Image (cartoon, helix red, strand yellow):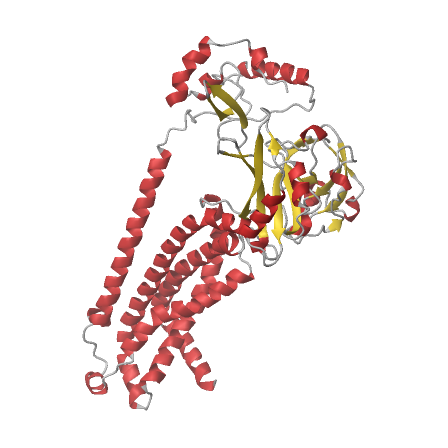
Length: 556
C-alpha cells in the first residue's frame, strides 16, 4: 500500500508538471466517457429496465383473434367480457387487468379549465406491476361496474402541482366536464408519471361484450414456469365461439405477446447504432490519449533508465505508468459524468426513441457504477500500450546520451500503429455519420401529403357535450378564425394526420370489403393544409361533392 500511495502521489505530481498535455488528455477522455455515460443512461432505460417492475419477463399483452369461415384471422381490441373471461384462467395467469385511456382526455373544471390525460384500468392493474398507492387505496371490482360512483387516483406530479401535495387530498373531488369523481388515492412518482388522473375502466352494458371499440386493452402476468405457447393453448381452448352477424360462427383464440420482448425490439436497432458510434468515439479518445502519453514518455526515457538502473524491474515500471494513467482517468471520468448530466436532456429530446414513461432516463446508481467500471478497460486501452513500450529501457544507450533526445516515440512502430488505428476508426465513424445524414435527408424529403410551412394546428373541444352545441360552436369558431388578420385559410378535421388519433371504418367495393382510416372535414380543410400528392388529386372531386358546412360537422 505504501508503494501504491507513492505511485499515486508521483502520478499527481506528473499531472501538474505537464499541465498542458494532462489537460488535453483529461478533456479527450471526458468527451469519450461523457458520451458513453449518456448513451448508457438511455440503454439502461430502454433496454435494461424498459419495464421497471418485478419479473418483467412474466408481463404479457392479451388480444382476441377470430378465425373466420373463409380462413382469415380477424383481430380486434378486447372487450370487458374478454378481460373477465381471462381472469378465470388462474392456472395460467396470476393477475389479469384491462387498461385504456380517454381518446381526447378529460376537461377538468375550475378557475382555469384544462384538458388532461386520463387513463383507465381495472383493479388488477396496479398489483400486476407491483405498485401500491402512495396515499389511499386501489380500485376495487365494484368501482368498475357501470353506474358505480366515479373515483379517481391522482398522478404524483399532478398531485404536487394542482393540490400542493396535501396529505388529506383523499375524499376531495375532481370535477370533470360531465361528472364528478372522488379522489381515493395518489400514485407513486415512479408509475404513470405523465398521467394526471386515473379512473376505473368500465364500459357501458351495450359494449360489455363488443370487441373493436378501442376502449379496452388486455394485460396479464404469467405464473412462474408458464410459457407463452402453453398460455396461448390453454386460454384459447376456453374461449367460446362467436356468432357473426351473418349467422356463421368464428373460433375465438387469444394472441399472447411478451411486453418485455416488444419493448426491447422497438429500441434495439437504434440502440445498436448509437452504441457502435459511441464505442468508436471512445476508442478514438483512447488512441488519442495513448499517443499523447507515448509522445510525452519520450522525454522521460532518462528518468525511466535511472529507475531501472536502481533496480526497478519492467513490471514495476509498468505499474507506475499505469498508475499515472489512472490518475488521468479519474478526473476525466468525473468531468465526463458532468458533461453527461449537462447534455442528457438534449440527448433524450433529440434521440429517435420512445422512452418508457415509467423508466425515465437518469444518471442513477446503475449508470454511475457502469461508468466506474468503464474506467478499467479505458485505462487499459490508452495506458497499457505506452506502458509496455516505455518500460523497454535500454540502459546503455539512454544513459550514454544523457539528456539528449533523439527522434520521437511516435516515429517508431508503436506510434505508427496508433496513428493508423486512429485514422481507421475515424474513417469508419465518418462513413457511418455520412450514411445517417444521407438517410435523414431522404426521410426529410418524403412528401407527407400536405405543406407544413405556416400550418398551425389547434385542438378545440367545448365543455358542453350536447351535439347541437358542438355544431354551433364549430361553425362560430370557423367564422371567427376566418375573420382574423394574418390567416389565409381555416378548416376543421376530426383527427389530424399526424396527431396520433384516428377513426376507423369499413367499406365494400363489389365483393371486397376492408377497413379504412376515416377523416371528417369541413370545406376549406384541404385548401388550408395545401394538400399534395394523391390527396391533391382527389381534391377536385371532393370540391364537386361539397355540401353545406353544417352537415359535414361531427355531431356525435
